[in-house]
Image (cartoon, rainbow, N blue to C red; front, side, top):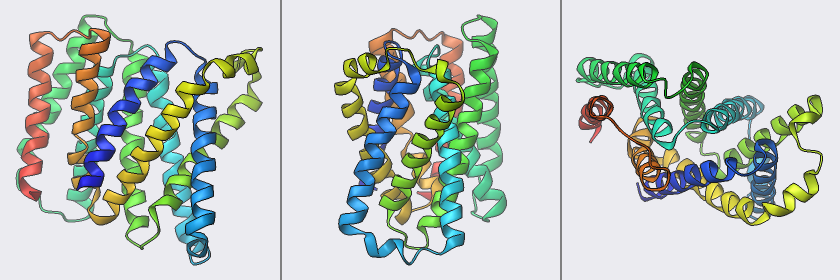
Length: 286
């Protein structure tokens, strides 16, 4: 459990750093540089301590890890594109929806008994629907942002479930971490090569200005993903997602403290409905 709690705190700090960094620097340089550093770190650790483990990974499992990593990379890209103009509070709410997606999958396909699933789902759906209606009614966010955040939740949930199946086979978590970061890095390389205009012409000068933030983000996200996978290896995606509720709560708090995100009473009520639904699910596995 301690790994999952640490991971949640690291992810919340990472969300804050993403918001701050994206407001100042080029999106693709930030993602590419950060994923490159984390990939190099992961490869170094594997070569030093887990080299023998690579040789025993079955090809089917390797393909599954790749698929999980692709979903994770897509989720990250959707999150960052939405967060560019979105808020940390909105990101926090959609992080809660990830729990609902995972709980629904485990309930219907893994036969994990959640006696309060029906009423919990109703609370979450009504709360989420009310929240979306509120922010759309006030024209605070575009429909594009809502779609991107929704896709983020779906991709992250799918990635978490696939990684869980892989980690159940006693694969070292660092391997999944490293492959995920490599996929993110290669995705950015492909995008930049296909559309060079995505990166500013003075890329080298731009990169020099963000070395310190990138290194800090790389350390934090590497710690977040690694501890998260270690926790996932010894629990299941639902417990992992539920404990990771620390992340959206801290993310929302950071948004209020650092970006003055405002909440109406109606939005707070919607958030409480979502949290109540998630808490009911939590009662069944505690």
